[in-house]
Image (spheres, rainbow, N blue to C red):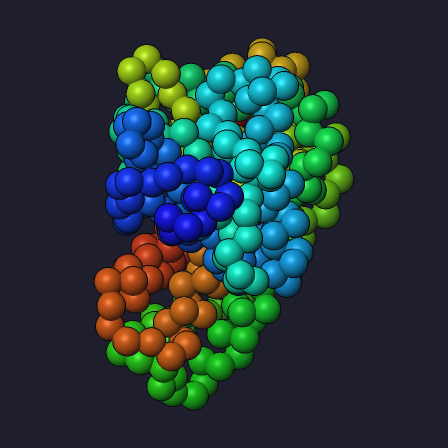
Length: 325
């Protein structure tokens, strides 16, 4: 990692520490002899299917996402966007062989909540305001990709459901996962059918806006009086509900606040679609991991717990939608 930082960003890291935070990427904190502090992210180009189906496509999509974050902070003036620091070559990411890509960010001393944790009302309102500002900055997003509406791991989920009739021999969690999914298979297929029916309405929604994709509490860093929105690899053009489903409550107060700020109404059906999409995507990911060859590790133990949680949250009831107009 020191050689990557030196060659790419001319950072002479005298202290380097691996940070076991987040998911889907590898992270380090780095300092130099002058006590300057950075946060380093290394992405596995085989593990980001929403950006493409080849390493080349994923690298291109990741570069476009980081360039978009940079433009949001430095051209649109959105101070809450944690954007990457360009390399010495002016690139937002630098390749590490053919499989990985590195990016460097300012180190932010602060704290984040856990994924799934409910935000207090004040923080929820602040997030709505941030998303409204982000969505209204769409004109600067000249390099932003169109966010994928379909399930990127749909094939994995279909394959999983088709193989429930024979034993899984991949590892210690394979058979327990299969047993769990056998009991839920009918509901999962029904939800996939509902997902397909709703897709037409989502794709017919009014003009897309620039969305973050995952504005959940774990991606919000509170530092003093400021709140930073991190992890921009999921940025893309799509309906505002792609972001808003994570913040709009059943009262509809947040939807009204967003509409007052942007002039755009929030569609409860599209909110329900993105809530369902998230659950199905997680389900396909964790099921495929436990069906494959594996051993008992903290990572696979997490996948097993997450599969059970995802099923409990996604299945009952099917497609709950807010009751507000």
